[in-house]
Amino acid sequence: MGIRVYKPTSAGRRNSSVNDYAELTTNKPEKSLCKRIKKTGGRNYQGVITTRHRGGGARKIYRIIDFKRNKDNVPAKVATIEYDPNRNCFISLLHYADGEKRYILAPLGIKVGDHVESGDWCEPKIGNAMPLEAIPAGIEIHNIEMTAGQGGKLVRSAGIAAKIMAKEGNWVTIILPSGEMRTLRKECRATIGRLSNPDYQNITLGKAGRKRHMGRRPHVRGVAMNPVAHPLGGGEGHRHGGRHPCSPTGVLAKGGKTRNPRNTSNKRIIRRRKSKRHKQLAL
Image (cartoon, rainbow, N blue to C red; front, side, top):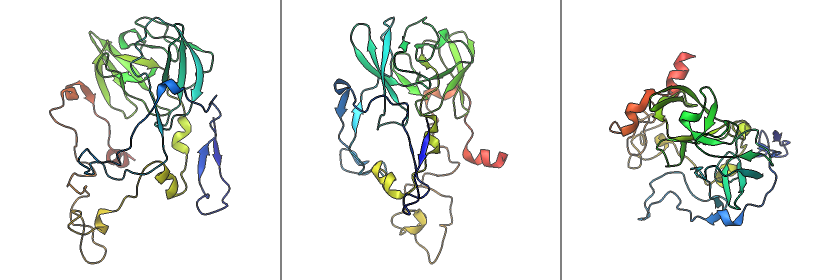
């Protein structure tokens, strides 16, 4: 895998780079596992914007991913490694022995022709999915379930992985890429290995237009708005609002707690992740 840097033939090309996609084996997705999803532009069914800075972008077809990995004790062969416009890691098409086809998140190092499997006590090798109780401690994992049978919810971004730290009774302690340490039920499933495309974080967009192609609209600073549009708006000259940075609805942008204190999984968090502010103070 590598990154290709453009020559500065224009201001937009200068300092921009792209992935060379050397690992991909095809550019034609499996039609039976694709579907068209209508865009919302960040609006709900009433037409009100509930998520800002969304809209436009290139058309995308959604690939149906098997996050549950619940087809047990049936070996599957890796047929392709493909690009997915809906996520930053690659995906792999599996051909099961009974003829079924499914997409999974591609782990780093998986190759076409490899065989993977899911089950309660299969071999702990890259690409296999199994319950946390059957995975040895210290092995990198991804696509982790928070509730058994629900499907993977944690660790699904490019180039990241979590680790199993300890096992005690019916609970398994894992450490997430953010530094958070939490406990999960031993029946929850995870996939062995680190996710593919680790160089995604090193890609430089180079111009605002590439962000628009991704469906992201411009951000406007609150201090540049009118008082009716933002709590930080208004004032003569370069004013900073006189209060801590916040969203248009008043939610704190830096250091404010946004997690619901009544969330049932709070008691399963042993150590919370460190915020960017704490990391800067440590430096």
